[in-house]
Length: 344
Image 1 (cartoon, rainbow, N blue to C red):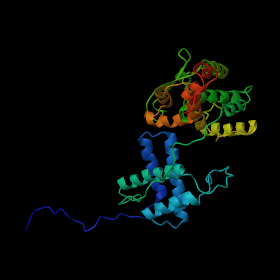
Image 2 (tube, rainbow, N blue to C red):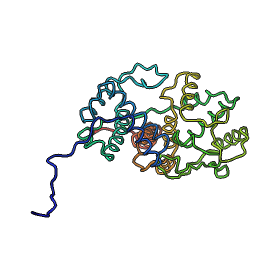
Image 3 (tube, rainbow, N blue to C red):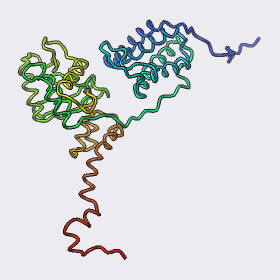
Image 4 (cartoon, rainbow, N blue to C red):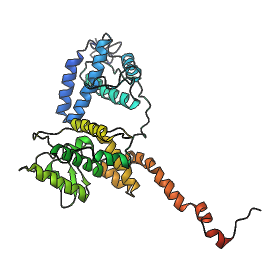
C-alpha cells in the first residue's frame, strides 16, 4: 500500500452554507473594519450600502448570494430604486440612481462578500463575471461666483451658529478640504502665523498628513470665532454646536441646503463637496499650479486633479482671443501699416 499523499481529494470545489445570516455577518464585518482602524465615515458608508442590499435581499425571498442575485440587485438600483428612499426626510420621486452611485454601493458590497469568502462563509465570489457600470467620471456640478456670494449671505452672522457656518464655508473655499477633514479640524491644527491648517493623517482620506494654506481674511474670521468660543483647551474641535458638542458634517450639509433655500436659486447641487470643486476650478482659473492644487486637495496622483482642467476652458478661450494670430493680423491699425491683404 502506497504511503504517497494524494494530490486530489475532491471531484469539485467544496460548497459552504449559503443560508447566511447577513445581519450577523454585517455586524462582524463592521467590527473587523474597526479593528483595521477604518474611519467612522468609511464604516458608516459600508453599513448604509450593505443594509440597502440586505433589505432588498430579504424582500426578494433571500435568493442566495450568487452572480445572478448581484445582477438583479444592480438592475433594481439602476431602474427601480427611488432616490433617497432610505432617508427619513426624503421627498424625491426620481427612480433609478446614477452609475457612479450604483458602483459605489456594489463596490462596498463586494468588500463585504470578500470578507465572507475569507471567513469561508462563501465558497466563491458572487461578483464573479459581474462588471461595473460605465460612468462619466469627468463631469460634476460647480458653483458660479454668484452662487457662492449668495450662499455666504445665507447664515445669520450675528449669532454663533450662523457665524460658525460662514467660517466653515470660508475654509472650504480656501482649502477645498473634504467635509470629513473639515469637521475634524482641531483648534491646535491652525497656524495663524503661517496662515495654514494641518490636516492630520488620521482624518485624511489618504491617511497622510498635509498642510493647506488659508487666506488672511479666513484666518481673521477664525480668530474671531475662537475668541467668541472662549475655550481653554486648544485640542478642542474647531466646530461645535451652541451647546458645546461636536458639530458633524451631516448637520452642516443640511444647513447649507437651508441657506440655499433662504437666498434663492443656486445653479448647482448644494453640498460641501461642490465647494471643493469650486475651489479647484477657481484656483486654476486664477493661475494656480496643477501640482500645487493636487497637494492641497490631497489627491493620490495628479491624474485625479487633471479632471478640473477642462472646466477652465472658458479661460482658454479668453486667452486665445488675446493671442490669436488672426486677431493680431487683423486688429485695428495693423491693416494700415501692412496694407490690405489681397487675394490672388
